Image (cartoon, rainbow, N blue to C red):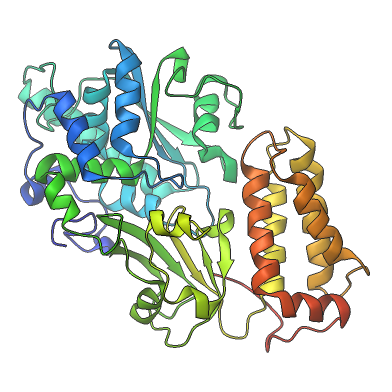
Length: 424
């Protein structure tokens, strides 16, 4: 794992400089044909790390086929998921690895403009990326190397690059919301076609790619698709960054895909199974006994009806209440509504309010039943994916914490020792 994303100097040391980055990893390969780079990414099997898990090579190919030299690359580091820290830490500590990936993507898809979209609350990431861009600009001025049509050597792209602060909000990092914000200053998802890869920023074909995906692309360009596939214990190859919370040794770590949840738990100091929130607020709950043998592999998790999402593995703390924790998440998600449709504005708020009443032991006689009914009526009716993701989370809580919901609803009693639930 010595060449993987988190290899190199301690994360506590802050941003790696351009000189240190080049000394550790060497330059990007010069004059790599863009088509060959995309083919290499496709052979690697690299999946996007923003949550959807779409094949990176295929995404680049889709934009490149429409670009005609006028595409846009939007590097997505908004990271609105409250339990995730991977993107902000990556940008704050390995900014040049991210910029390598951005420049490779721009050359490969035929971009004439780059947007780096960083969460406005992630100050360390914003500062590190700004300094790294300036370092490259100065290096380029010093070298004045001629730029060719292929992928460059990492001296710094001459393509105009703009850093934009993504507004605070869960939905602001969704790809169409990011494009809408750059175009209109409004970070709300847009569901009406065309999609960003067809017509995005300024009406141009736009590659919206998560920053971890771009960092992986930079490593694959250097070391090859076979090297990338050396890691991985299951169907999906490679490594992934995960954010672990609720454990004695919580924080950011890099795992081989296919590592089980139980292995992550033991690595982080947890010995016995307990409920785990997988994928964060847009993910779902898993019962401890069922979760421990599950592999953190996007393909196998999808087949099992779960999702890797943005790589959040959040263990319910000992003595915490799953009902109370779920109610807090639901309140947050209802407050994150894009306010574009009734299912989101009214449906999610109704579920959140009912969940809060149940959690406080003040549930109305039919609150749990009504939550189930709202879930069924909202499914598939939202203007964006927020309602479906949120009700999926709520449905998983009703399954995993069935007895606790019954105790809160019917007996007005919390069985958790502390009576206060939190998953972080």
